[in-house]
Length: 366
Image (cartoon, rainbow, N blue to C red; front, side, top):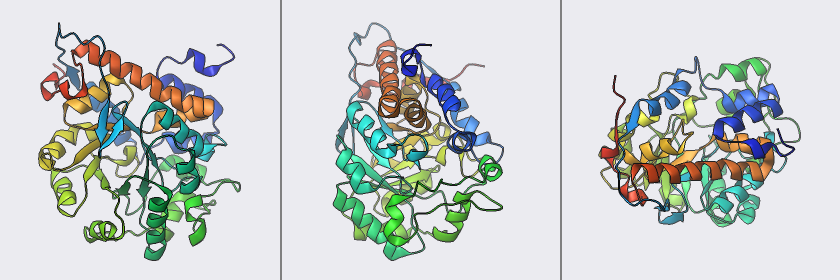
């Protein structure tokens, strides 16, 4: 191993292995873990292995163009940085470093409500678009103030998470009594007095926080409410059914993110790739469809695109990179994915992302 830990990193799994060495057990398990028996966590990855790529030949795809657009915003590759909480646990510069890495990679940073840096500071540090992921609190005026802050700061879209009326039972976090250390806070909630996430005697501190503060009674009417208080485009994140996806667009959303929260909410939920075709068919071109969960390879990205996703979101690997090398490590995660996407495009015969069509994928032969 050289002095630079990133020098010997070959793929995203290498970043995870290095991050495990650097992070304390509580933090690593918080990032890596899932709900219950972690069946859905594993299935998100396994679903990609259940598909093969039926590549084309002699297509002249030696210099593929991986650029795309999402909500009219140009991306240099069909992958965004997913909203994940508490980047300050991985690196002192937290979301500031991650956002700079996303901008350097030419893609979107989706900032979590539960960031350890304030939205204004993150947008100021950005060299590319920042979207804001939103949890809705029982305190609706505080939620509205947060939305207006995100818009005023310069965020370019809202991403409403709808799969978390209560926090999934994440047993790794229960055992470790997960909490934020005293020097870290959820800074976007400081004005509302909801920034502290300390230890709980009997449970994860995050579970106690969700139970006390987040609104478990959201309905479809709340999508319309958000549309009424913000001019920003709105994506609904946490959809795994076609009928829910269609309803989201009916209620005014501009698209959906097919997501099971990285296997961290309902254990036994379907793998996101398995339900992607149903959602795409139900949306029927009326809005954007993105996917997260289990993406680790460029070939995974192509499988998602072939099934109709506009782009994917990359979560844990960016955190692993951040833990290993700060901004440079997060950027390395995105660079590795980009290189694999470009290679996979050449090998399947796709000169541009719109040539990644559904006939390129098929179930793995048994």
